[in-house]
Length: 312
Ligand code: GDP
Image: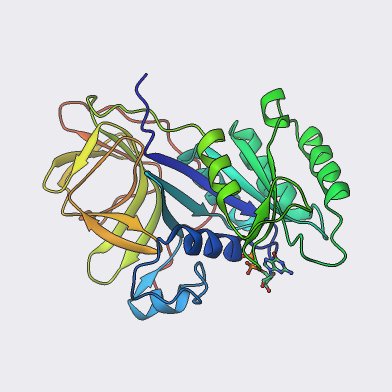
């Protein structure tokens, strides 16, 4: 099987305040992905205000980080149990997860909740033990707690072999051991590239794209975010949406968006493994498959158990 070594799709999961935002900020900073005019000190994932100004309701927060020759797509996940369905859907778009755990606080209720979702999807987690700079940090104990939690949640043998990185996202340091901290995010990046599988390259096969999350933008209307599971998708392409009720609806892809850093950027086409946003169809819904007219093959429908679109 051909692989797309130029991509990794991961989700970042953690209990609230354990440092997801700060870690992603540091990774962006370290990789130099920030566009020149962007403020590095602006908290990466807290871009709600900026997005609101542009009239966009953000539901999925995707950060694309370019590291060496690879684009790492990092999908943020809500930790709260009310968003269980959304977390599950995000897990279906990625090939691995970064589990961030506070080295002092240890495993908390949302750690358990999101880790369970990741393990159920057979994803291989990388554990980042964060806040190693805290004076009362207890990394060795917390790692034992994490291992216990993996076992309790039914991790398989492969998942139990989870790699661990120790970090202070706040100070921009990381390392293989709690004591050996260096001012770099390199160990985290290297682990992502080595440990998380690259997506399959199925560019020659018929398109399948599944709408996994919805978003809305005043200019282009409804936006379906998802992963190109198979084949290619391009602007101008005539496709069909396989609706939940079994009907088909044809439409033309009018706009495609990819991601660079924290921003969406218009693109002309995308290939298997890419996570993209599609505009141009007002009644697409979560779970529906977009495919070519002559190959209407739907992907298994996704469960939805919470509201997925808030138009304000
Ligand atoms: P999130 O809710 O997981 O996105 O957490 P944030 O990244 O917003 O971090 C929550 C709080 O923890 C903020 O006040 C951060 O400054 C702080 N924080 C994040 N990483 C570290 C760290 O490595 N060390 C310390 N001491 N504080 C951190």
